[in-house]
Length: 410
Image 1 (cartoon, rainbow, N blue to C red):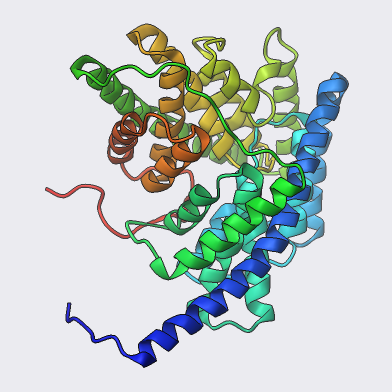
Image 2: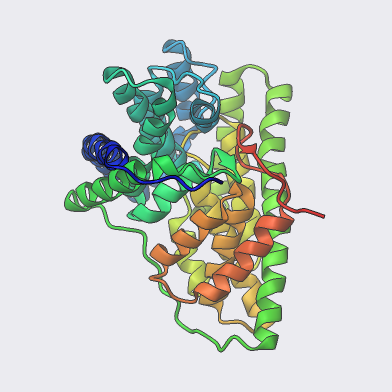
């Protein structure tokens, strides 16, 4: 590439870019932080309410019907969720106006009933809806509109999880694998940190976990870690196939959305009532804690996989990433117990490696590891993430995710 001479015009142009996007990012970050903080508090409140009133799980079939009715009533029954947000980035597709209120209400309702769904899908949709709204309000051109969407996504994601760097990188990386939109870096970073600070002031705690034991990275340990990365790639593939397969099969067998939601809700409720099954309801944060402490059952990852697949098939809202993290943590802990690795370490590695394989976002995965595990054991994470990312192929949680370049070259 030809080297360009830096002139005063270029400096002023860059300064204008920095100023304009900083102001935009701060505005989106403040609103996104407040929105994310309120959403986090609502999720926490209904989760506590469900824990104190176990009978609420019997409402899950009715909640599924209500969610379907809300989307139908808002004339947004064809809402594609996170895939719609990714389309807005990569293809400049529209984001429907009811998206924000609908995903907020439906995710809170899903958690009230104990559906195995996360929060990140809601965060991405809330943030994308917010960024798109700001872009229309300020009449941004098409080339900047998708940056605004990523900016909003970063703000709400960071507000919910307290991981601003990971939030910004993930929102840039997820839409098109292999292409990193550097022009979005400043807006996304600034909005993410602003959103995280605002949510923190509202009392939303960041997601932080502890690795108790760190072994020396000798040849044998390296081999075990690499094997875990390989197995996590296969688990990521299985996870994507099961999630999408359950959803497609349910739509074919039960084309009526209300009947489908009710049937899946009844099945999930029945499973929760079985002894020891309550831990598999909800997002899975409690299950992650148990896995890292070595207290999860060896088959826990399979049960969490089943619970989440049923929730997705039934149309319950919230997203798949937190359940994916809990599935990875349980599998990693099980592998560590068998292979002689510290359980907290292997659980953490499985958690991040399965995320990388299922989302195809290796850089964001490493940033999540840095922020959630306080920067410990990065070489271990790098090995498992790299192997899982490459070997998981082109499977993805998101059907609208695009691969700009091949993962491997021969």
